Image (cartoon, rainbow, N blue to C red; front, top):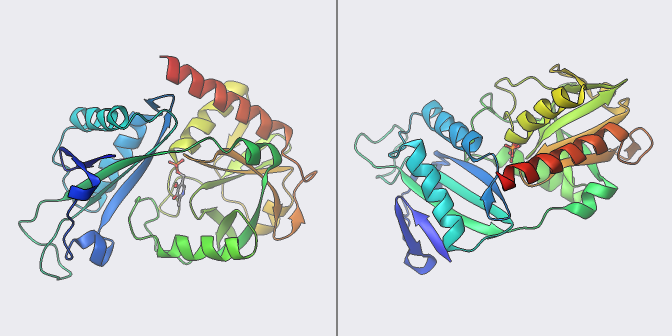
Amino acid sequence: DWILHNDEFIREEELNISKEDRGYQFGDGIYEVIRVYEGNLFTAEEHIDRFYESAEKIKVIIPYTKDVFHKLMYDLVEMNEIENGQVYVQLTRGAYTRQHQFPSDTAPVLIAYPKKLERPLELMETGVHAKFIEDIRWLRCDIKSLNLLGNILAKQEAYEAGCFEAILHRGEVVTEGSSSNMYGLKNGVLYTHPASNLILNGITRRVILNLCADLGIEVQELAFTKTQALEMDEFFMSSTTTEVMPIVQIDGQQIGEGVPGELTRKLQEAFEANLKLTVKS
Ligand code: PLP
């Protein structure tokens, strides 16, 4: 497999990362996951924009223009002959003698590599179970940071309870999933946490909100509570890899009829139509 290392394509065996890379020592970096459908990067521009925004928020300068970066991502997919999959890309502040403050003269380190991945079609049919877990993360969840301890501890707890995802909440208020955004539908209105510092504004979330506008589904970007979540008619999560994923049970309690809801289904169909359109264009 070919890996992108800064602006060079190399073989995995040739990759050499310093023991003092700040991503490794501090989680001092950012990342993106971009979906590949039929050899095409889906919503690449939106992911690239968010990557540059995350970099700016942690004060790292990406040494390429967005156009160059986009081309590197496409080349990576092509060179590895990825049809359906994803590209993982991360950028760290670089390597330097360990110290907390930023080094003054260190170049950032970029790594990107693809992986083959099918769409989770079966789970999208049946829906998944989720578990409420207190959101103990920091207050800049809008940054797609490499620091994911709060997320992975929550995901692990959910997995150990036999659940697919953790629904994070600060006190009573539901924020997002450990690696997804969360939505409830009540009386035909879609509710989701506003894009504040408490959530990552998912690219899939943005696609879904646009699809709601197309489908005439009213959207309220309003936080809801755990109690309200359990009383929703329908519930689902979204992410780059899970698309529109129905949640049919939370903490062992059935949501709505306990099967993927009608509007959730409509959104799944619209999402699929949208990705096929994008792939063809
Ligand atoms: N929220 C968190 C914490 C995430 O890690 C992710 C993605 O992995 C998302 C939301 C969904 O974002 P996207 O739709 O851009 O994949």
